[in-house]
Image (cartoon, rainbow, N blue to C red; front, side, top):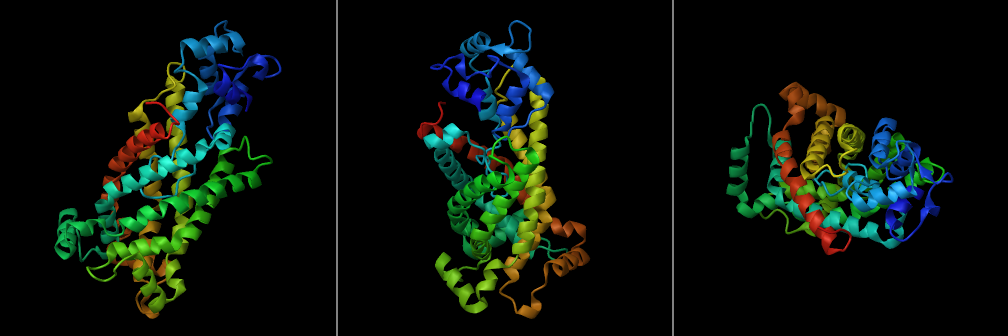
Length: 395
């Protein structure tokens, strides 16, 4: 943590915070970035070091660090970390990504909850802005088939005819409502799982970070899963079917029992691993590729690069986990049927493939892809404004 401490306190502290030799080397850079979940190769660490090294020794002393910090304030490790955090600010409506890392200073100062709050508000506005596309995705997942093809225009026309323009936002209220508990549970669980998987919860390797993130996601999903079922039912409801969230929950409980609130739970859990794993792996690969070419010149990759990396990694994660998401939604929607008509996960997959072919498992993926770019763009802008308003960054 000493290098991160220097970054945070460089203006008021002295060289006593450097390693015992009084210099920073590439290993120190790697370790410091790793503490925030940002793995960089030895080669990339050397490039970052080279950008600060004046005398060519590939070791940075206090004087070199101070001069670099004063004359090139945009080229320091703090900014590299800040820019490249795979943040929850990029909210696409699927809460399966690995949680953010926070420094000890952010945890002790309370900065972490401000960032989580900013992310939650950004997610709420982003989801509300893209809710019509999300409802179309669910509508196509459940109702579209080879014999009943539903296009985007036809689907929107059908929904508006049945319930008016406001019906495009059905299910959005509960989708926004579940952000806060899910984010809080995931963050707390992630911190605990990291401690269990490493001696001190620090310098955690990428694969352990992935394991901790997946377990945290599973824990959060288990806790809030009934809200997922409610969201699907409210999204698909007909006009006048339910008066609100509580009426929907009461009807499900009375007619179908508690078990109905966990229909589709298994495919939902199974979807966490491919989504989170591929999302993290692709993002890390894109990040390291950018750093390998540009780390020496600039810490700031720019908004387009950040949004591009987040969009590509999330899209790749969705491609891998989408069939499980479709099966989950079908099971949630069919929970109201007679028990004899409710297929298991495996039989439902076989039925879909037999009737619609392999691509039947990707029904509704077009509106899902269409919402990614506006979702990440809206959430990024709102997140940055919220951070400014909360006093945790300057625009």
